[in-house]
Image (tube, rainbow, N blue to C red):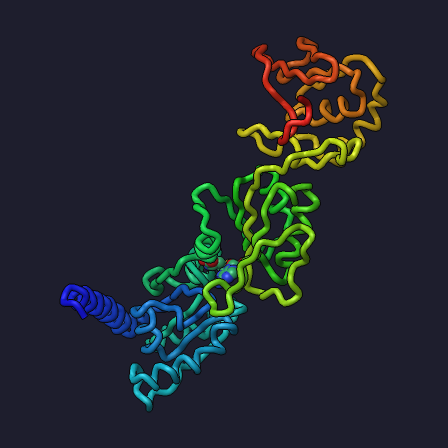
Length: 369
Ligand SMILES: C[S@@+](CC[C@H](N)C(=O)[O-])C[C@H]1O[C@@H](n2cnc3c(N)ncnc32)[C@H](O)[C@@H]1O
C-alpha cells in the first residue's frame, strides 16, 4: 500500500475509534443516569449500522426493535463473537419487540430505573414519523439519545437518483387515506407516501391516484425494504399490478411527469380526467372535479350556439368541456365579481380577470390550437 493511502486509512481508523470511544463513554454515563439509545437504521438492521452505533449495541443488555429486525439479532451477535468483537461468553441481550410501541413503555421504564444499558432500533430517523414522539411523551429528554439514520424518504430518492427538495410527503400510518387525495389535489412535483400495510399499502395509494384521474400524471415508484440485501425498487406502469409478494415495509414515490401528447380523437366526448387540465401554480387542484363537471354539463343542456359565461371558473374545465361538446358555442370566464366583460371567440376560450387582463387557460397538453 502507498504511504499516502496507509496514512488516510489509519486516520479513518483513528477517527472511527474516537467515535466509538465517545459512544461508549456516553453508554457508561447512560448506565449511571439510565439513558435509552434510540438508533435509526434501514431494513438491513444491525448489519447496516455505523461503527459507533454497533458499539452501543454490543454493550446493550436490553435491545428493543421491530420483530423483522429483532429476529436477525442473534445471528448478528454470533457473527460479532466469531470475529472477536464480542467475548464468546457474553450472552445475547434480552430482546423485546417494539411493533406495538405502547407495550414497551413499562418494561423500558423498569430497565432504565435499574440502570440497564438499553438500545432501541427504529427505522430511519426515529424523530420523523417515528417512535421518537411517543418516547418523548413518556420519558424525559435527558433519558433519551437519538442517533438517526437516513430516512426511508432519503433512501428512496437516492435510489431513483432525484433531488427531493421540492418533494412533499405524507404518512398514511394509523389514518384513513383521504389526506392523500387532498395532498394530490395540490399537484406536488413529487410526493413520498409512507404506507400503512394494515390499510392497504401501495394498493390504496394506487386506487386514490386512479380515482383522482392522475395515473398518467405521476410515475409510480414502489420502494420495498430499502437497505436490505433483498431491497427492490421498481417503477410500475398503471396496467401492472402491485406484486403479490410486496414486502409490508414499503413506500411509494409519486413523481410528476410531463403529460404524453394527447390525441383528442381518442378522448371521451366529455368527462375528461382532472389531470388533463392546466393548473394555476399558486392554486393547484382548485377546479370543478370530474364527477361534478359531468353532472353540470348534463344539467346545463347546452345550446348548439350562444355564449356561456363561467363566473369564478378556476382552471376553466367546465368551459373547455362545453366547447368540446358544442364547438359553435362562445365561452368566456370571469374571475372576481360577476358580470360579463369578456367574450371568447367561437370555439375558443378567453379569460378576463377583475383586472381586465386576458390570461391563457386550457389543457395540460394543447388540444385547442
Ligand atoms: C412509521 S414510518 C417510519 C419512518 C421512518 N422514521 C423514516 O425515517 O423513514 C414507517 C413507514 O416508513 C416507510 N419505511 C420505513 N423504512 C423503510 C424501508 N427501509 N424501506 C421502505 N419503506 C420504509 C414505510 O412506508 C413504513 O410503513
